[in-house]
Amino acid sequence: MTIQNENFFKIIRAGINTTFQDLGRKNLYHIGIPFSGAMDNRNYLISNKLVNNNLDSPVLEFAYQGPLLKYYGDKIVISITGDVNFEIKKSSKTFIGNCYESYIIEDQDEINILSTKKSVYGYFSVGAQFDLEFYWGSCSTNTKAKIGSNDGNKLIDGQKIKLKKTNDDLSKKNLDYINSSIEKIRVLKGTNYDYFSEKGKKSFFEKEFLVSKLTDRMGMRLEGATIENIFDTNIKSEGLVKGVIQITSDGNPIIMLSDHGTIGGYPKIGVVISADYDKLVQLFPGSKIKFQEIELSDAETLFKMYEMETQKLISQI
Image (cartoon, rainbow, N blue to C red):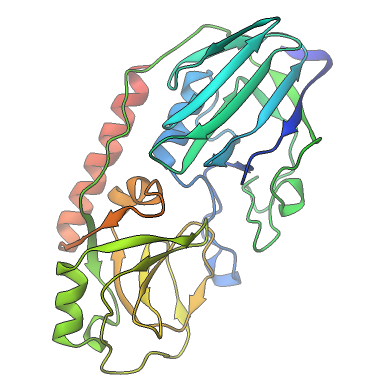
């Protein structure tokens, strides 16, 4: 149904780091454009399914505290995924919302995304098309590189989020799903694994690390045992991929996340397997991490299982 009158959200409070995200940009590393896209891919896909969208539709991603939005327009359906506290205000009545459940909102309703719980990222989806510009086939916002919708910036108080088209299907949906935590992050050996001493390798796999407060969409810094390097702490810059673990000059690991730079000059001791990435990015500062080495064949099997489980969840909606 093409809307006749303007439908939009007014941002009363933008939240800490609210951006437009979708599946990201593929095959552009060679020109220095990172992948970007939703940090937690499974929660992103589920959020779109709950509002009857195409699975690759743009959503709002927020970290820690989400936006307070007031809606103006025709009836639409919305949903929030992740581990999130939020409220919906309709007229004079306010009620607590449930994640993984869709809601119909009307003119003048408010959605107040108060906070994430024991996680970092959440997703707000709308049964409509956001009025956005796409860059290299994606709306995803990379605030460090100033790439993507909203001129590459996070959303701010007072902005208006326009909708171009609303879905005809306003049926309510839900999913019985709980975000599980992870005890160990599984990794493959990195291309510079042999640059580290036996003591350093042992520390990497046996010691516990803490997620630092110096963590964002670009990277996750860890604190803990120093990883001893026997070659050089600075090497010729090489290409990076999402999930790769570099050891900085102070001996601490940093994991490259979705908005990472495409080259780097620190030795790479390992790379987080794709099947564990969603759970990795949801670890909040102070969380404990241990690494577990696995082989490539096992990583491929685990990723197939992850994809099958994700598709099974989507089919249940």
